[in-house]
Image 1: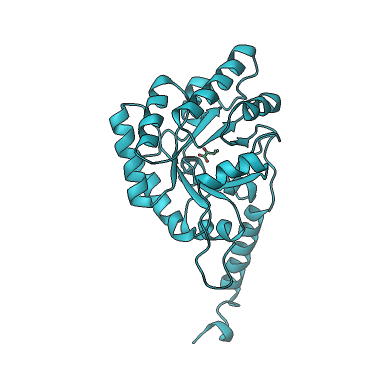
Image 2 (image 1 turned 135 degrees about the vertical axis):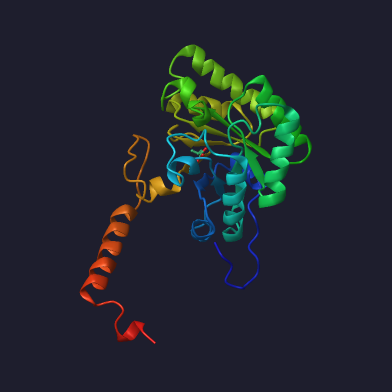
Amino acid sequence: MSSSSGEKPRRFTTRNLLERKSSGEKIVVVTAYDALFGRLVDEAGVDVVLVGDSLGNVVAGFESTLQVTLDQMIYHASAVRRGVQRAMLVVDMPFLSYQVSVKRALMNAGRIVQESCAQAVKLEGATTEVLRAISAITKVGVPVMGHLGFTPQSVLAFGGHRVQGRDETDAKDILEGARRLQDAGACAIVLELVPAGLAGEVTRSVSVPTIGIGAGADCDGQVLVLPDLLGLNDRFHPKFLKVYASMADDVRAAVGRFGDDVRDGRYPDAEHSF
Ligand code: KIV
């Protein structure tokens, strides 16, 4: 929340994330992609704002996140930074910005932090290469959020948006992956499209918070993509999504009324003219 005394509000940090794990108070995360919505969600009191590479889908209109570049992430992240005062700012590392080599991962994480003032970066998966990148990034002092279950940058390999960890082997991989992410130094782990029981088991087995999306109620926090929860992205209706507003309808109605006023000569009237 913004401070009424005019003082700068205290920023939410990785320390607060860990405190929430022990206190049990849930962590609230939403995505944002620009300064205006960054400010609005910050004023609404969220704990973490994620500049997700979901911007490839909801802002750029791509079918997946694979087309998003590092420069695009930095552009959006620095815009969000200008709107967010209190929440922790986490920025997704896009496809191929951290998988090619540890050195490249380190340089790219460094660019995100230097150019957008992010407080953490998020990487997908728990392969050996990704774990090495996470260790190297955390060792230079940049916190890393992990991401397991359905990892959107692997959508082609998964063959679509599918719940992960339904069979025993996959469930074991996710559980083991979460422990490895914790050991590599991750400060939190997003669990996406994972059965609720498995997400609860992961949450109880690691000492860092889990943030669920389509992963049931037992995670330490929840994240939703902002245009989805606002009802702006009204062609997307996954089972896990709860929609809290009807902004797509509001936009169509408001712009429709503006169009009618212009066509019928009601706008601008004397009140709105010089
Ligand atoms: O890109 C994104 O918005 C994400 C969330 C779905 C967790 O990674």
